Length: 221
Ligand SMILES: C[S@@+](CC[C@H](N)C(=O)[O-])C[C@H]1O[C@@H](n2cnc3c(N)ncnc32)[C@H](O)[C@@H]1O
Image (cartoon, rainbow, N blue to C red; front, side):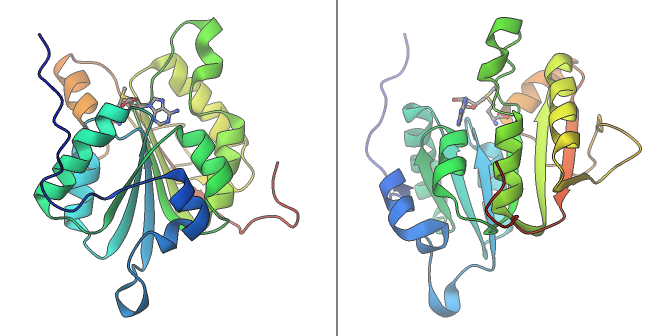
């Protein structure tokens, strides 16, 4: 039997809505003035949230926006963020591709992370994968020049698709051009699923692409 969901937030509730984001912009969700964060980082599909919590603890002056499609996971993460007393995390429930495509302004992020998004292994489900050419174009538009898009997967077919998509986006450049992906990133914070996949002995695929330019006149498609 599954445990009852706890709805109380033992501290500050840092969940925000898409409307808040539309009204205030990503910067407007965080402190302003002298305390305004210097860097902005987005994670799409944070799952159980271990990775986002660790990053946010390591970099208290960076703003972290976590997007998750699961209501329960956002709620559970809101409880964890409150318990940890973190003030540099904001949580949004929604589809990453919609939030990024419609509610994140041009050139306002320094990093985007998509860790182990669902691989949808059946070919007919492939259109449901998060990493598609439209998504990559939105990441490139939303990143500052010099900003980095980090992607990880455990699925070889999805890895091939990610390689094709990212290497076809003109504003993104592979940080490791002699290899389509890396199979190990020393010093990397591991996500919950990553720990599970490593225990199972699966191969992992890591991508880092840097944004080389600001948004095109008239916007990218
Ligand atoms: C396989 S889990 C990986 C979780 C976490 N990143 C990790 O590595 O431990 C994929 C997560 O992405 C979320 N997700 C799936 N589609 C999404 C979407 N379109 N936008 C945001 N989150 C999504 C799921 O609810 C799930 O929590």
